[in-house]
Length: 462
Image: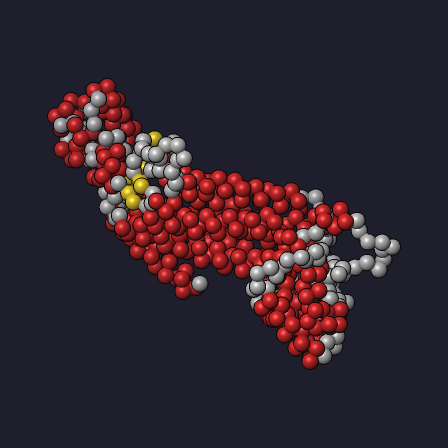
């Protein structure tokens, strides 16, 4: 069945029907479409289109359709134009002529906007839960390895020592911001367009607030033209998804490096790695590589929808049918990546000794040493030069920081003393960073406690 056709002398070509049909992907909106249609049936009863008995029958029929949808093959053989015509056809099979009334005063333009917003709201809730679970896994890993020390990097060169827990909490903070972005996207999605008609507002005195209350929307759209053509909420969703995927990709890249033989800092579990069809020794970080790869896919969906929306005149245009597949796929990819990264974190093990040895054999303590000299009155520019000269001499002599005696240090610069020599170990250098947010043991313990408290709040809110 079609929801239009009287103005046409003949039907569309089969080629065009195949080209323009959307049921293959917008079937994901089934539950949202039924929820929206039930709320609209309630509105129709209030303006006298349905009797109370008719509305009740329609509601029961919609519930029966939802029950039927749980069966395998529910969509088999369906050649409807889209999910909306599919649902109305199914309603006709159960409620007869009442299906002909359900679309009174309603446009598919407002219907799809409502369905899409309902679906996105539900997905954001699911993503929020997955983000929280991954954040909890990071905190648990940090608590399992409270003493592990990692050489921190800038430019992928060893820079300053940090605790492994401090490193993990950096990703915790990124994911916190991701939750905030999705919360913002949810707030802008939580607007009801139903009652806007095709573009000019409904011709019936519907109680839009009652529909919003029934569907769980926070507020009503303020302008009918904007309501049916707005896809900012979908862009907001895709932006939040893209940034989250960028963060997951950075974590994946770190661990691909850290688990390599060249680093040897980390082992990933058998659950998230694979072997080679030819090389028996291989243990490949496939899960992380797939996450890294899928980040481009999700970011591409954001650009795709931006280009679709870029030049559209008000109000609705059929181009907007292209809004759903990018969002549907981005949500699926993000949810899968969040779940697999949680498993990756839960099954990973660090080689704390290898990490600390890498830190100690390098000059990650150099900054702490220069700052220690500055605290004793040496101008920092002079302290920087002194420590730089020490590093240069170490490179020439093939010496590690711990190889120097106090006497040898003083031969390079008289400002060095026993306290300075103690600062040459990576673990001693950690104590130099006691400010809130720093990587000293006390600061990191405070940060872990705070992260645990925030997680508890998230779970209570969820």
